[in-house]
Amino acid sequence: MKIAVDAMGGDFAPEAIVEGVILAAAELPEHITIVLIGKQSALQPLMQKHSAEAVANIELVNAEDIIEMSEHPTKALSQKPNSSIGVGFKLLKDGQVNAFCSAGNTGAMHVGALFSIKAIEGILRPCIAGFVPQLTGGHAVMLDIGANADCKPEMLAQFGVVGSIYAQYIFGIDQPRVALMNIGSEEQKGSLVAQAAHQLLKENRRINFVGNIEGGDFFEGKADVIITDGFTGNTMFKLGESFYKVASQRGLSDEFLDKTNYESVGGSPILGVNGNVIIAHGISSPLAIKNMIGLAIRQVESNAYTKIAQALS
Amino acid sequence: MKIAVDAMGGDFAPEAIVEGVILAAAELPEHITIVLIGKQSALQPLMQKHSAEAVANIELVNAEDIIEMSEHPTKALSQKPNSSIGVGFKLLKDGQVNAFCSAGNTGAMHVGALFSIKAIEGILRPCIAGFVPQLTGGHAVMLDIGANADCKPEMLAQFGVVGSIYAQYIFGIDQPRVALMNIGSEEQKGSLVAQAAHQLLKENRRINFVGNIEGGDFFEGKADVIITDGFTGNTMFKLGESFYKVASQRGLSDEFLDKTNYESVGGSPILGVNGNVIIAHGISSPLAIKNMIGLAIRQVESNAYTKIAQALS
Image 1 (cartoon, rainbow over the protein chains, first blue to last red):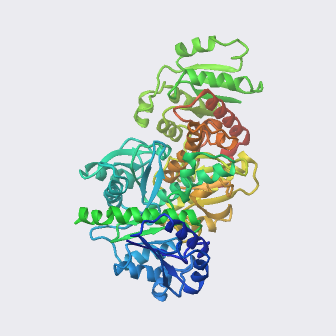
Image 2 (tube, helix red, strand yellow):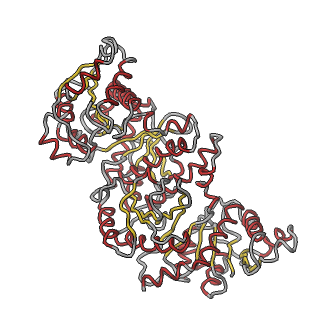
Image 3 (tube, rainbow over the protein chains, first blue to last red):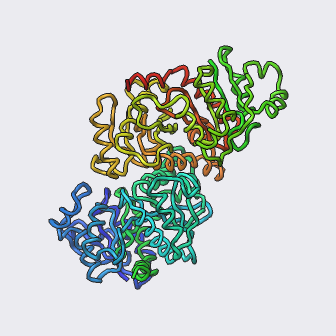
């Protein structure tokens, strides 16, 4: 198995990325290799700081260009085919790696996935999924957390199917409980889109729809899959992550609140595309990068994206 | 000054409401009276538990009917003019009280306000405002937190004006910083509605628009007024309130997190109507009721709703 990592993406790249890859590599079984993509001249000195053993299962692949965080995704990708993101998607498309992870330009990652491995046939719109720690243990997967600010009811209904299969294969849950984020428990509550989505989700026999949940239920263990549009999902997800930051600032330490730290999962998959693509916060620390690689491995092992493709075919 | 309180609204009514009113009354100056509206036969025994002095500035007004939490707002209001909510709005409309507060049926409170004191001329849609504690001290006011699940850009822009005046007169801030909740800091980010609202807010010279904020900025003190639609606002506000609950469950205690407890402010005003109307959580405790009455008094003293009306005339 080969996991490609963009060494040049993120506010603290390449140092933090290399550190994270080294951390991950120390715990990897032999059959897994990390493919680190970036400017050879910048990466080699960082790698040389470590023993031959520490970097044994890390391969370097050169990519001369960098897509900056502020660049326009589509323009940057077409103008910089030799950027680390461009090269990563080429490797992924060609089947030379099993997953591609980056803490770089999110838009470029999204567009890159759509242009290279492409959306799964039948998918209305790929989305980004986030892991929400639950007080009852484990995580719920929330989608969309930002790819689609405006959603139609049909998209939300399909997120239900995609999220359900993802939770089934990543969490190993038999009939994941799928809930719709809404502003009341009754089915006639909410925006016009949420009301219509509720009906579509309720009618869908392929998922275990448990109805609406509200903002106060976010961490309460009421669902394994939380469906929402990319606007609400993004604002809520970031607010949820801020709990750790606020608690730290207040000098509070707690095992559960630690899980609301973005570092603890480290990445968010793009779902609905023909491959494993994971994006991370620009501010990603080495620990976040390490955990993102762990998530990538789980995704490759679970084969979730092919299960999603099968369900839609 | 007279503050009317619905004694029959809320999950723990009338006991918790009466307790809260007694708590508030103990700290009130002589010129303020609380008008407690509800079934005389239920209230008198509760009042008699307390000394004559404790209930000196509480007036009872009889209302034989109760609008239940689950009832259809418009239907219930027209069928039960002698409900505590119906009587409360009659007193408010007739100028016999200066504010009306209830932890009862939110929909009935909203509809009651629209039917009795009515929306301020020029207001596109009244909204509900929530207080969000800020790490830098004080609160931001967020609107809408649930009255309008679907919002047009013009509505969001008007929330900016309404919220700005409210913050000015309630918080005593000269040029309140108005921010738009969005999924990125750049102005082209977000849903179509958010993008259009950003432009309208930016062009409005009557407010101090500071641009977009994101979910992670919720508690960060970046704005005095947070503008959003009632869907996003409701889910975020409830998630923010859950911080206290999660922390308590985890055995954590902290002065800032205490402020995320719904009890600490106790109520949310309906803004954009010709009077002071405040609604509270169904689960409201005596402390929440007491603090809601405190907010009602601040609103009456600040005269904020007439300032909003003047700004729109």
